[in-house]
Image (cartoon, rainbow, N blue to C red; front, side, top):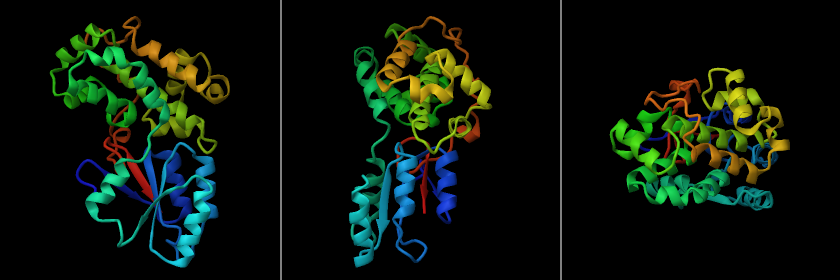
Length: 276
């Protein structure tokens, strides 16, 4: 049902689910409130409160007990529901997963980039949009060039002509934007976020945050407002000054390897879905 570009990460219990949410990049959590034989809502409400950046989709059977749970959860902002054997035909289920809301700040930043994006080829525009909405699918220029269906050298030239930064700087900005969203969740530690974003160390992650925002990661949610976050990252990606790979070599200092590029479900990019 999920296709080759997506991966489902099963969670065998509530603790397993929270561990997956904390440490693995996830686009959506697909949860059955009655998965363990007892319809539960407190665990889901707690998850939503600790990780508000993560969309939650309820996938359950139709019964009086589960419908009461659905009504209760709607009062906590959990409004996406798919009923087993009613509206879970494979294609429709996949469309539902892929339509889950991403990080709102991604759309805000992309809106601010409308002018330079307007002069890019359509395939590259789609690639940049995918980068900022699903950043863990990109480790550098090669990935963006592949998605945009253009040679690597052409990619550098086109971005520069549009007044945009190098591919590695674009990737760094996309990851830092997602980092900001994650760090606003009370359930995430700095180490969790560094791990989820594929950094080789917490120290390297901290250096990138300080260079961009002027504060340590632990202070990011308290001292940098969402609008300022967008402005800082806009400045980063619309200036070639200070690019670390102007000679055409990737900056792999984010530590992105296989762990930073997991498969995905619930989104078009290679991130993971956790379910319980």
